[in-house]
Amino acid sequence: MSRIAYWTILVGTEPTAFRARNVEDLVPTLKQLQRGHPNAVLKWFEAGRIWDSPDHARAHRDRGRRELRRTRERDWRPGGEHRDPRARPKVPRTIKRRLLARRYGWKKTGDSGEGGDAPLDHARAKPRLNRPSGGKGRRGSR
Image (cartoon, rainbow, N blue to C red; front, side, top):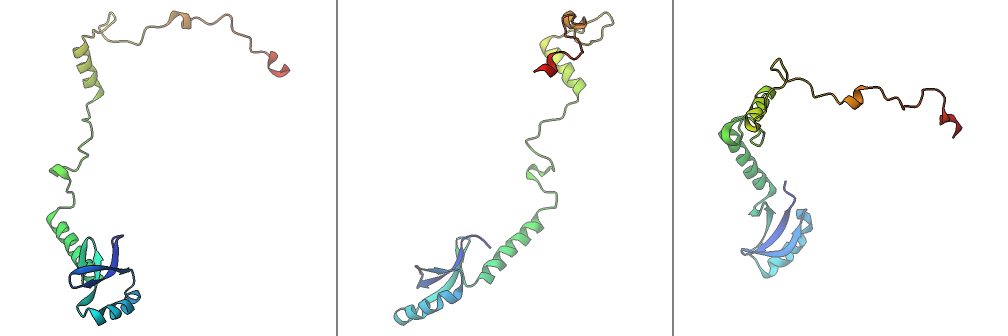
């Protein structure tokens, strides 16, 4: 059931301001209105339409759902494919690298003709001599 669904009183074809979720709340008001307006009726409003009862609205809604299920297959998706249309194409890493190398003019380095690791930073390759010793220094004295 939709969020905006209620019983309402119609006088002829015009709706009134009388609305309620339960039909019992509107019956006394309907009887009063029918004294002056014999064509006043109680109707159900749901999904932007006037219905005779909530059952009629539910039957119409269920019939529409069944028809949709019949017309579409289980794996229906926009475009007919069962995949995310926004997904980027999956290209293997080696092909990506080859395309980038071609685009930016990269050349393979090294004597063997194959790419190697990044060049070593010689400052980091040597052990640091000015490092503090591992003994119990000032740590415990603070």
